Image 1 (cartoon, helix red, strand yellow):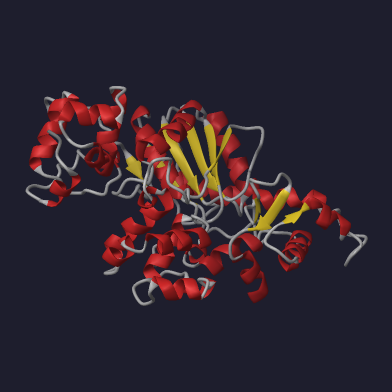
Image 2 (spheres, rainbow, N blue to C red):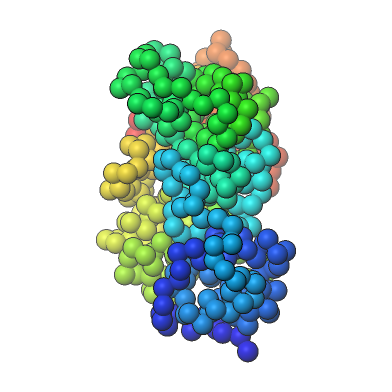
Length: 429
């Protein structure tokens, strides 16, 4: 007899800290089992296993935990490997307690890339979840490094071209985390050494605005510290020749075949955050088509969805859809975020500010075109206007694609459209 998901809402005892969603999924995968097989061996329902691994159930019944322990063959807790980042030496920002949408099945391939390559870059538009996925992958691979994980936030550094050599500042930030002894208070002072034999995963977060400085630092670190692996997050490619690039995609807007609309990754993410932050969660469960439509208009970007959930505290979903939603509705009070991460408008402006004048002019022309998408022929045909001596726009499109300000149309090769809210941001600039 299986235990139905509804029974999990009877909270008898908290889940022991080591038995978090990531731990359950890792132990199952370590044994080579599917969720269906674990359900069969434990007597729990497949839906319960899925919700445990996705972090939807934070305090399951003690009987369920006992069934999992028995099925997975766990005996004495001290003999278990440390999958939790709490047991890995860790410096800097930690991953969230709740599991990412997609769970271990999503994270495993990225974690494998990080472990297999000394340099990995996670690429994607602002708000797609690069930082979270990097921290999740670091948590999964950190146990393989003797000195654990260090996370260095680079988003507060000024962009290149606006001051002194950024490579020195990046290296200073890294040494603050990795160096031994007392650190100096400013760049240029005598800096503490990084142990030559350090074995660690270093995460450099938010690097798109200082590409040359980051890559100069990375080359130096990789050459002098053979036990160091580096994971970078950035909105655009920093290198094609060194390491591995992995593109992070927005959350899928459609459910897998045979699943309900609620199980579409974007919808699931929306509902999970709504349950934590608003009183409208029960109403949203009965209004899934509006939720799915709102997720589509938000581009499936997790941070945009989080902003929309915050807006739901004061504005019902029907009015959000009636008004777009407009970019000015999508923002957060969270001061832990960097300034360019606190609203859709600031996020797009951050990417726009990294463009050259030629790129920006082309993007403005594209945004003014009628229709939601365009073909390259339309752009090349307009070269004579407004600047016949300017650069060929065909040479600029790939840069706009790399910066995620243009998106490809998967149904029409060599057709593109501006990313969500880019047109509004350009008009407001």
